[in-house]
Length: 295
Image 1 (tube, rainbow, N blue to C red):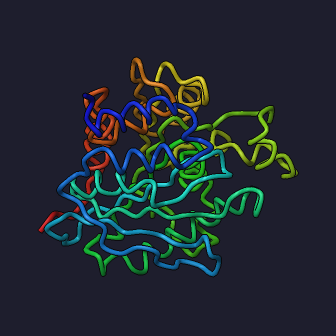
Image 2: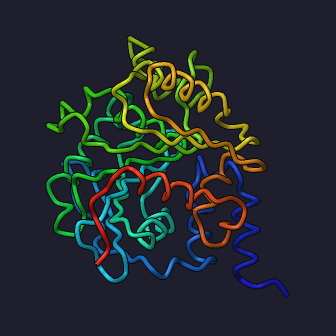
Image 3: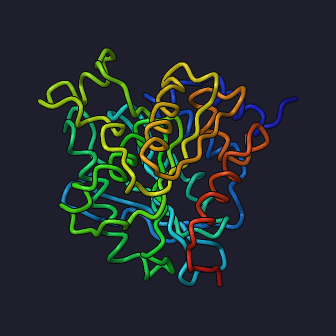
């Protein structure tokens, strides 16, 4: 008889790209696969702004942290779906690797349109600057990461420095940027989700992370799966090429056999053997000269 863990894995895999539009597969993932023992939720539902969606969770290494590097993770969901609690496995995974990890919610379509959800990401980063030391994190060592729509938001924040400036954050606040299967160069808008999120913005090029790639970009890690049919790998390839052409430092990683959901699932203990996504992110982020260390 199949174990509960095996049943959970099958259910999540069967959901596939539904991760973009429904949270139930991720609820199954948290319920049926073991959590990383080295990380724990330190605080949940912290307000970082005035809206009901302006809430975040903080995960820390099980034994605590002292000036530890900080990982901020922005989840995907087509800019119209997502709940931070469904990504507890991500928070615990990074915390177990020594990062104080922050996972914020942000406002979604149709409540808002671009650029409001990017502005929410900047507001969450300002909270990190002001408060993360209380959880053992080093605000001088921020790695900003995201999957899918969350990777789009992360790269907009990393590359279009106007968003951080408007939030009162200095250039260079984001030490490194990590994008998993993100849409970075997706004009024209020909998908209902992108039309809903960006179609009313009067300057379409300003919605694209690739438009802001320059030599001053933080070091970037761009990852994609060669079987991703939701956000085509060309998005990561194009952005990597543009960054390299400007002289910016970028690492591009393509994982064979992974689709759009698979690159995220590889962060979970139940699927980690499929590809070294977590190990590669941790290696990259910790190579950026963080001063922090685990207690």
